[in-house]
Image 1 (cartoon, helix red, strand yellow):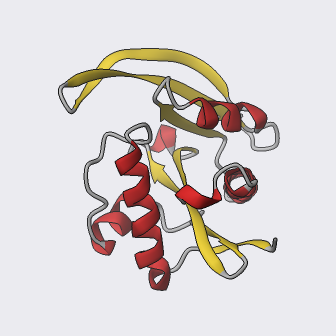
Image 2 (spheres, rainbow, N blue to C red; image 1 turned 180 degrees about the horizontal axis):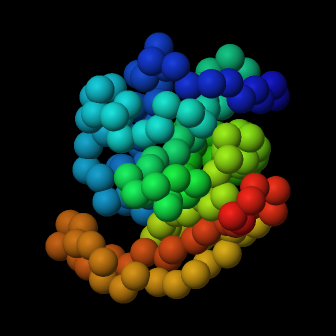
Length: 165
């Protein structure tokens, strides 16, 4: 098994879109219902800190950061997204992607990474805990999905190397 992490580029979009579609279809990754097109995805994510995971030459995961606010005070805070293809879960892909995002985000001066995870997504909750995230609370019934109101667990990781963290 050869796992490599590389910068996510526009040429990876079809694979990224399919992995995102799988996450949407699983029902425990996002409130989104459609991965959309490259332009929409690109505009929603920071140009920095985008990665793909390749396993034996095939893209099996992606990670990216999104801006949480345009306010200057939050310039070092970003929301992290990680998606792993159905057939590649449980093989260290998510962990490798998250480690790359953390390292690069700190190099770029981000002091806090945050995320929102459905409570039922125990694999994602374990993954972020492994990488130093803590659960800061639950937003109860924050969004409706397929006629069901869902909770979201808020997680954050404060950098120990970037000032502000």
